[in-house]
Image 1 (cartoon, rainbow, N blue to C red):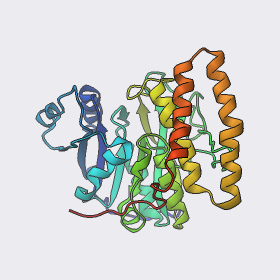
Image 2 (cartoon, one colour):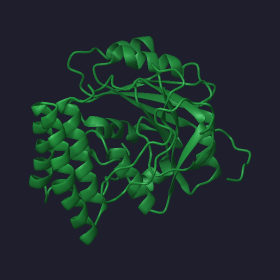
Image 3 (cartoon, rainbow, N blue to C red):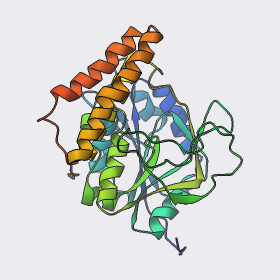
Image 4 (cartoon, helix red, strand yellow):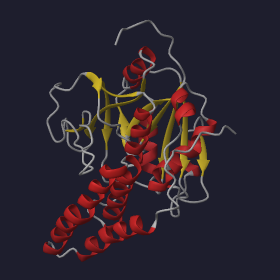
Length: 311
């Protein structure tokens, strides 16, 4: 990308809180140390039943606290803030992250210097495992298996991925997105509730002619597994529900038939056998609940993405 002098635009920062007020406060304290001078910060409370998010407004009076009446999931929570955002770009970032002080400038630079780029994610390290990478870009999805892989996953960060390049998909834990593209193409689809919605969004944005980038000069630390318990029925249900739904929404004709046959009759039995061998019958039930959801929800699945409506 050709570099050019730019005037730093306003960035709208959106994070979603659910029963994690102290975790969100830690994120906000890290944001207070950033060098980027022009941000507005939105915290969406996703109807936390046992947490008082009003404390955040007392401790961080500059934030815009938006309280949902119900848990809207990842996409719905983030989408709730969008009509109020005034930024040229929107940073969607997990509340269970902390940021490097200079992380935002390199991300903004990517979008400002090439209008064909719609989305960019930073390098992600695990917060609790020093210098260990979680994400340095994605491979392209295999549209039969509906699998992709995080580049650099588990590696020690020695600067080997301090590059800026196109990537196979976006990482929902931290993604800067052009507001112009959101207004033209649409927002995340809320039917996923959790998992795969950012990949579905990136796929639709790519179909609209835009590119997805990774910026290795930007660093975010991720406190993975605070929001959901790893290998829980909750996680297994939504990951597999989302994986099949992603396949349904992003394949057509014969390719869709081949993909669904693979997911239902090859991948499904293999996953099920693994749960049975581990005597995790709760995970077995959660997996087939996800399959059944996709079988029974057919005509009510909208195959576009929702348009942004300003308040």
